[in-house]
Length: 257
Image (spheres, rainbow, N blue to C red):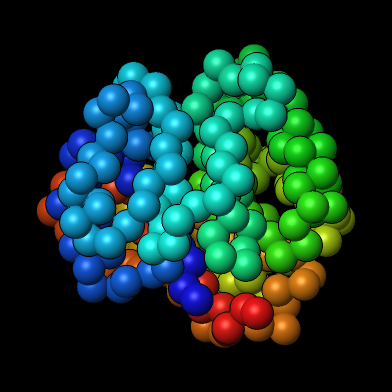
């Protein structure tokens, strides 16, 4: 089973790239973030033609998440369970034996901003939600754009970033709180010494200079650790014409009973 995630930074713009990537890589699951489409605009038929079901939760111009899967998604959830959901940043579904939660964590803008406080509150809410999900779904994968570099190893120049947004202690502590529930960073678990990035700013030729951060993550519950295979970041997708500023990430899982 191959699962993947990609912040596409507008599915309308990047749809041909997504379709090409699906055809070439054939993941069982692809979680998209920042689709920036209303539900009425979502390209259901184009994806169905490639053999993918689509669960999507969108809004105009901003945010938006989707789970694309070969198997029919079961027990779907779009937004928070209590229905209080002004921003389309979360969706979940069971795909075969796996529970998949797709998140687009708020950026936070700057540590002094109201958006940073919103980010920390959102992460606390996510932790509470995941604690409940784990009780019902021990085999759970949490994928998406976390807008947090977990450690200095995930930043091209930790000194330059310091304790700014994406790298601040409070954000990293919130992410650590999710790990404490029983989640593991699959990429770091498999490659403890690797320095690799999933996001490069469009400005200052950051991709060409390979100056990036690893902020797109696949976290897995402890029950999935025995079946972890390879994981990776598809830098080639970032080389496309008019690319997203993020690259797709992926993880191979063994056969799940």
